[in-house]
Image 1 (cartoon, rainbow, N blue to C red):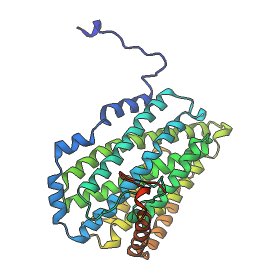
Image 2: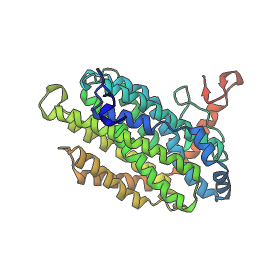
Image 3: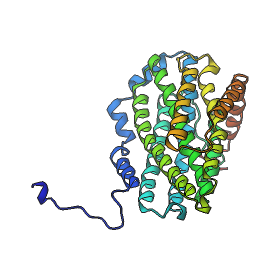
Image 4: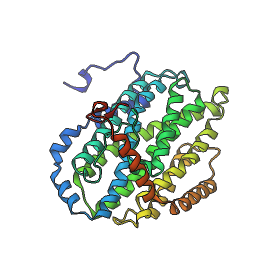
Length: 356
């Protein structure tokens, strides 16, 4: 059949030329990787062998990084449903393409949760002996997550996402998108990939590395989503529409509120323990500055953008991290975690849910 003879594909309500439909389509094409099939294709044996050969401090460094991703992905998977609700906001033009994309978004976040949960319980179970507490059902983040800024970042994200999903105004939607897509996914997660890539040089874990590649591809679309969403809100603010006034300032303020938690987490994984696998905290800070400029200046061109303020907040956060007793924090939260697990057998549902 020649091109001239091929039928023209038509749609009615769905705008196939929409940038949001394009993100949806990419999610369908690239985001449907299967965790079980990935394990079958790559295998887990080499990861287990390499893991068992690592020194205790090297395992601890991996555990600190992966714990943050476990709870990070758990938190964002929970917020996936709020993304769907948020995309239906009248302030976002009631776009069916946005809502279609949001359904794929939620699916990929759930898949990331599945992958990291599988990995720590299959390969890293000696440093994650108990992972059963569901933070939504009377539980708490893993002790290592609670010991660093990632826990606070997750709490902040959840609070803003809940407000934005429940008829939030444009300023609240902007705060939620900044926390979730710009800071958690755009800065913290991408910073984590930087650390992971360096650590892989010393301890290659092929299944973990491949899983991270799929996750980072998915997250790249999510960051694009955030930039598109915030750009739309900023465009309406700059057009003088009253309901959208304050969006630019809210984006900048929220980014600065989140930054210390990101710095704290990065230090916790690297410099706080003498960096046995060469994660490179200084290199990460440089990478973070590049990402920060690309998002908030080059892409969004915020009127409130102030690089000197960023540097001051980052330096203060690094100083405070250098003085922190992370080992003491881990021990404290591990004791609390253990107490929550010490439940009557009838109150524990196997498979990760503690009802109390």
